[in-house]
Image (tube, rainbow, N blue to C red; front, side, top):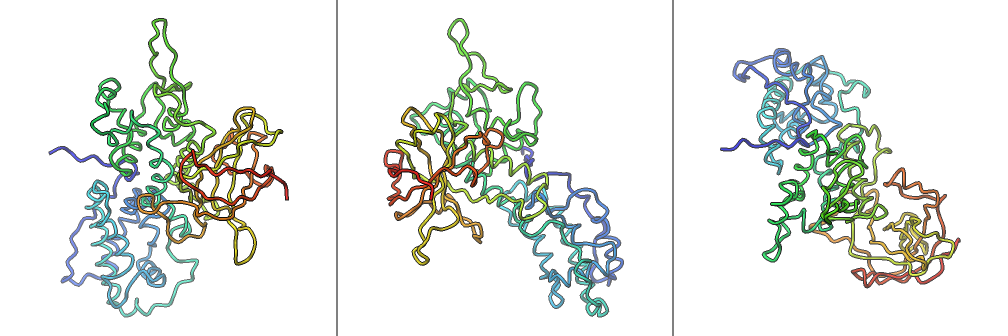
Length: 451
């Protein structure tokens, strides 16, 4: 039986040493002895706990423990993480058990031994503490003395593996057909000839795997490999230097004297046998770079506050907006961002926050512009839509289109940037039908004016 591979995305550090010493409940172990023999080793370990299975950063089991066994228990009790009447149902234990239902089988099996050891140790110690009348009745700690993660709750949720996968689906996986047919073997039918590509270029052609999770696992594993003469697929030091974005945004290599294409380059200047698939001024490029940048900051635990978190609320659609003839003073090739604001009928005003946006580059002497709409979920949405179950679309109605001009080329240094008031150019009202497809793009016919 082949040895099961473990994803580098989920296993960020080596597992904790397995806790030794079986716990014999019948022996009547005291809370102090159980803490010393089974909980203290967790505190002393430099490795991360099994929390890494579900959280890429921001939280560790050690964050909920203190050097004193009494204060550790009181802290857990006061934060509602211990059930005094039903110790086995304590929330802290339920959080550890969540790893048992992880749909990622590799991660579930890789952390199983460590997860069970941690659960067994804490369950026995908590049960013993709950049976100690003095501990149950002990005075509360001051809130500042609680043992808990340094990162706020929103940052902890942002680092959840499930959130990272959801973001990957929306920002990268949803655009995989731009790489068809060369890198999407599972999208093939009998009429296609993927084997020809595979025989010529090898396993690296199989970039997008059967599922988003498998694809993300492959990308992160490959990115750990340091290969001379090749940039990583995901560059965690310089996101814009990731091959995941450089390749599709590059042209074909030059031809030699015999008219044959030279070997494609995987270092700068990068070339791509498949030629240009994503323009650097396109929203897809923006989506790719935005996701990699967020992933980089997440795994490096770089978010210290909720205010630093990106909105991460982009949902691509099949709807388009178009400016057929832009203003005469728009320079050719300048980048423009269009933000769509919905009409609030109840308050008889435009919504302050945009409901969608797109980005494009002014083309030709007509100064035309077309872009695919990205629906923006409400910032305070409690639950996120899923591309595989809910289609993101705009309903027909009255909308306000605001145009922002990148005349200072700020997007050159930060492709993820959403332009602000300083770049505002003008706006126009539209009565939009928002049909699907490029051919039925919603056209802004009115002149862009400044209110």
